[in-house]
Image (cartoon, rainbow, N blue to C red):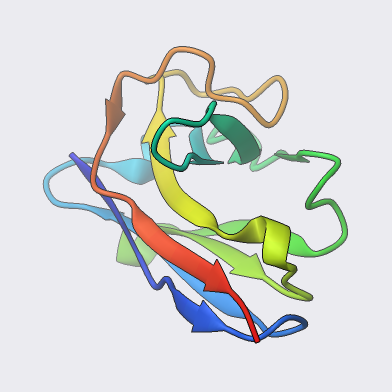
Length: 123
């Protein structure tokens, strides 16, 4: 199971770094994506990183502000979020479809995910 952490309350224009970790699950072997979803709202794919070549994809709403990366030695995938806006407020999750390649920012059919982390952007 994957677990997202690192969320919190930040002012507009601020930064946060989210981490995706997993015990006994090799994140380096799979494409890992981040999505965000508030209760009762539709899921929105944010970013995805392939394991085959570390290629990355971003939604138009976060492109240029967010950066996805992985540290295989720590079995962790990060989402660095800069220039945060109020509309970035959401619960963020990491997930995988157990494939190695991302084709866009979405993990269309998640096979593994876990508890999300709340990000609140407010003054």
